[in-house]
Amino acid sequence: MISKSKEVSTTNTRKVDTVIGKESSFKGNLEAPGGSIRIDGYFEGELHIGGDLIVGESGIVVGNVVAKNVIIAGEIKGTIEARGKMELAPSAKVIGDSKMITLVIEDGAYLQGMCAPLPKGDLKERGKLLRVDTPEEVAAVKLKTP
Image 1 (cartoon, helix red, strand yellow):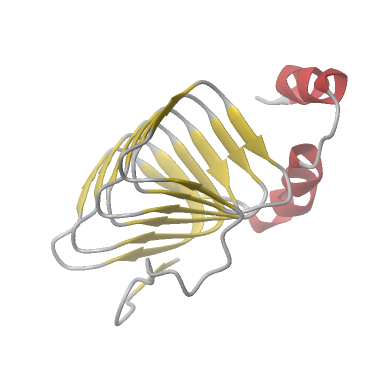
Image 2 (image 1 turned 135 degrees about the vertical axis):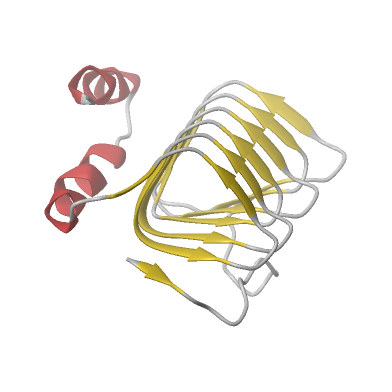
């Protein structure tokens, strides 16, 4: 579903558990099965988030993303799987294929890549796969992921 929204919320009104600040960079894989993350700096690697991913205006993500909702005011280069909503603010730049339930694009946002709807029936199983605690469970999930 594509919908029109008056404003994409990238402010601090959403609950965020982890922040990668404007002057920070991170390279590697990051998993937050039960939390939300905001990126205002530079991130390179894989993101698997049980909650929301918020990429602020100064944020840059290079890598693949799986999250409940993905709110973008900055830049993502890689594939995105939003198990709920993907929102692009006017300053957003996305290069890569994406799958989501709902897509909101503000005027001025840049999106290059294929967009496909995510089947609603897959949500429960995909959500269960992201809730892992041990390295062994993480490895098992990676083996099952298509």
